[in-house]
Length: 320
Image (cartoon, rainbow, N blue to C red; front, side, top):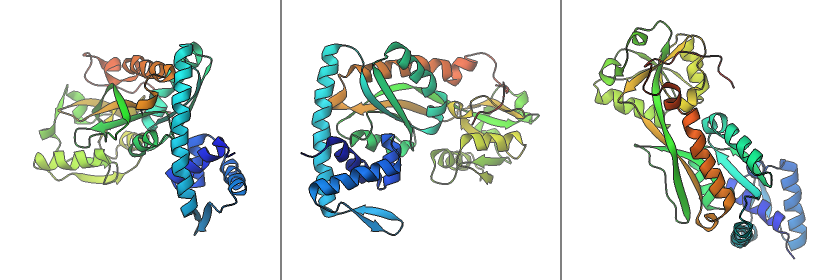
């Protein structure tokens, strides 16, 4: 009889395209995943992975087996959901995927509370690109994802995946301390001409929003520094090298030398929790989504600033 854990490993490799990616998603080491695949090859007497350059590729037989594994895992998930629902208490394994700033700024408190309230529930977090998380849920690689979208880049909604809003993550204009904008209660888009910008690379939503907005206002943005991570962007701003538009969840505690000023109208990204329809009744999903929504006000920029001071000053060093 085929071993389900080995089929899960093969399915993860088929979804992520590599042993390393599968290992990260499953919480294993790459060596452990390779061993699972090797055992499955011996069980089936079939070659499942072939070397392709520095990576691996699934054989035709492996693709067939991975499709079968996905269907079997869906059946197992339905059975586990029914059992957990009858117990009425969250339990078992809950695999969660979240993008970087949510994994850093939102999930630690959520996971700690879930561990305290539901000791029978084992939650495993994986940090993933938000563009991948929806497919990971749809394909059964992860049980729950925290993802986001923007008005210019809506979140895809594949069949069989449900979602709930966690909250809105507003963006601020982050400028160096002493910048003229720090004396203003609000900065308008028409005021942004002639500034030097620190921004994410082309193709990222923040970059696309900046270019579209500036051109609509009649300016061509002067992007002098490009960085992937929001914390890197904030550090460059704190060094006096430019200004940036950064989501509040992405800034965290601002370092000395950086000040956040409200930008109106500014971009807003919306955070969602996503799960498969077949697991919607699972108490672990319900508890996790509820806890995400309850923790959001404490970590969002609205909770820090409310309707009060318009300028958010640094309160400590940025944590990596």
